[in-house]
Length: 312
Image (cartoon, rainbow, N blue to C red):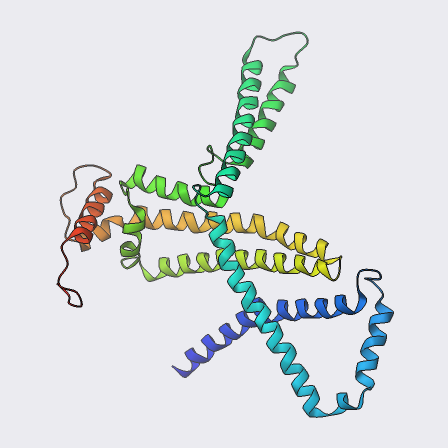
């Protein structure tokens, strides 16, 4: 048992060091360098080295108490920035799954739908042109290549017309839609917490790992935003922050897709187990398990409750 707890503690320490402390130390170092160098001479390494030598030459810098206090202050500041990045990562997750009924989100959804519709229109026009009888001025091979190029461009925008402001929101929305179309689950938010309890331990571990990976990509995007803020004191940070964001966006889409695939697999494979646990035995259609489970859970939610402070 002690070995297991030691391993858990080591893993948590490694994650804390890699995800919170080290990026926080880098942020603090860039902030200190930026405040000293300013915007005029951002790459004056000699000037920075001279400043560090001046700090090291002070008598107080040679005492152990000062060194411990300085190291502690830097570590605390780095940890605080790391915690801020974690909180900001949670906000990034909410933004990625933002509903379309808010004004900024609705504008973004209309823009995405317009781009997708235009790409679809151009693809259909190219397909019709390629399907026409050969024309001396039209090379069939070039027309087919154009269709393939437009198809790839439309696929990059999404496999279907956007229904959410972001591509990640679209991916999770497709999971909910698929649960209703394939398994008859028309209230996935109601069914999923109950389904989670009957999943095998290995599958729950895989989903939790995928969820953690998705959260780490949101935290990476948060670090990109925090590094971009450093441009206020050191303009090269305006290049670092967007570069981090550019890495975070495709990784977040891949992580969201992996998480959604696992959730869909869990629903396909174990919805019947939940129906069995609820005592549902007679299923009339292929999607009967989802419909029956949803109806049973809705009945349980709508059942009259006992007096306040008591259980029925």
